[in-house]
Amino acid sequence: MSFLAASLSLATSAAVGQSLDPSEILKPHPDSWPTYSGDYSGRRYSSLDAINHATVKNLSLAWVSRLQAGPQSPPTAPPTIVAGEGKAEFNTPASIKGAILQVDGVLYVSTPDNAWAIDARDGHQIWHYYWRTKGGTHIGNRGMAMWKGWVYMETPDNYLICLDAKTGKEKWHKEIASFDEQYFSTMAPIVVGNHLLVGTGDDLDEPGFLQSYDPDTGDVQWKFYTVPVKAGDPGLDTWLNLDAASHGGGNVWVPGSYDPETHLYIFGTGNPSAAYTSEKRGPGANLYTCSIIALNVDTGKMVWYYQNSPHDTHDYDSAQTPILIDGMFDGKVRKLVLNGARNGYYFTLDRLTGEHLVTGKLSKTVNWAKDTYDKNGAPVRIPEKDFDLAGALVSPANQGITNWMPPAYSPDTGLMYVPTTDSYAMYYLTTTDPRGSMGLGGKDEQSLGSMGSYITAIDYKSGKIAWQHRFSGIANYGVQPGLLTTAGKLLFAGDPGGNLVAYDVANGNPLWHARIGVTNAPETYMLDGHQYILVGAADSVYAFRLN
Image 1 (cartoon, helix red, strand yellow):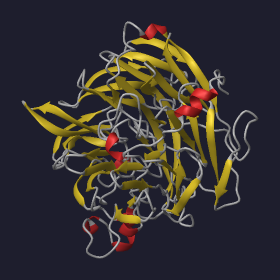
Image 2 (cartoon, one colour):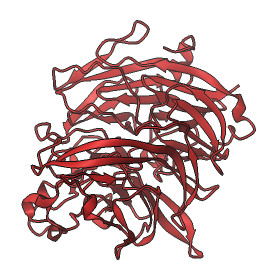
Image 3 (tube, one colour):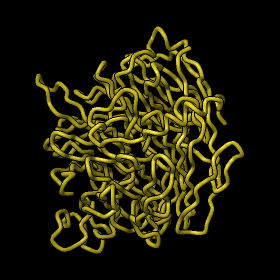
């Protein structure tokens, strides 16, 4: 519950003008966080510098707000708005893993089946919406989107919901994928102009896709499949046959980035299906799984792609959010894409053409690929590291060197920052039936532990590690929820011990911390002359500011 619930009158006035013109996301004001990464670039960099090396020691808690998931409201909160297509109630405690929007002094927070509006000044709850679900995988929700006076979220049972930003009342909901085909939806929608971009996930044998909706009506504008689904589709020759391709996975479950100059939406795709037993996929590259794809946002047509895990056999999907920068390369400024992939490799690409420029390693432990790259600069898989009856020692383990956790970039250092974990596992083939292991293919994975977790800073010009900050202890996957950089020359992150930490962005030295149990990537905004640092910790939202 809020520490400062006394300022209801101020909060009520703040809630009156909630609206976001989509053009404002092109150059967001420092007093807002209007989209998943703060802006379209994926950099998660803020121009705010009131909190810096000299002042960060004075950072203290402004307020904390605890959220209650489910249809019931706590006594101090307004009544919960209950809707939905199902009868099931997943009333587990809220766990905030996604982005929190901040527009006009109001925060929009989401967890599976739940959305809240809370006041950014004191944390008191304005409204709460609860979706009564059909079921599905409630692994997390990566955030909401906003267009004019409406906010949008996905549900685990595959609905896109439009809510009034002022009241939380539902305008419409649309089915975005078949629940019966075991899709489950976690992605934060992305607004680009009059397009609402929506992806979904699935670990069974169905095709991946990205859809564009009309944010006003909810009508589908276009649908792009990430694998071939009919005869003559590009990439079909990289699969055994059409049946394999059209059930080939490649899901889109993490938001991408957008280049307004070229109208390209650039995003990553998931692993092929079945992930581990690949015989029924054929020996080819299995396009366009484990790839970075650039689409024209107005037409939904692919302009270019780059596959960074051809013929993946370890569930190393490439859904990680790419970062877009204009940076020096070989003596001239180029428009670039920076990508730290789950397979343990780093890539720099030309964002106009997809031309490969640099490949590097995020970790020294990676051993599933050869020391040399293919003609496109992608790693070449070692077949002996596939799943085997006798077992194969593989690094990284299934969760990857990195995963869904948002990376960041600082123009002050020219470095990309990636949360990484060095891990090993033994993989045993248990069945060749592709339906095994939730459709991923039959395997038994025995984790052998971690060699450590890090913040890894990458030089995009060379692909080499500039520095690493190793966290104390032996950390498991999922304890680094993402990063934020600022013009105050700071890098904010959650560490495996549950601390929110401010680091020196130049070298990773810690400068300040608060132990709260961080579960999402930190954000920042300016409000009433104060710079706030905002972060989720399980079922609570914490806001810090200078004394």
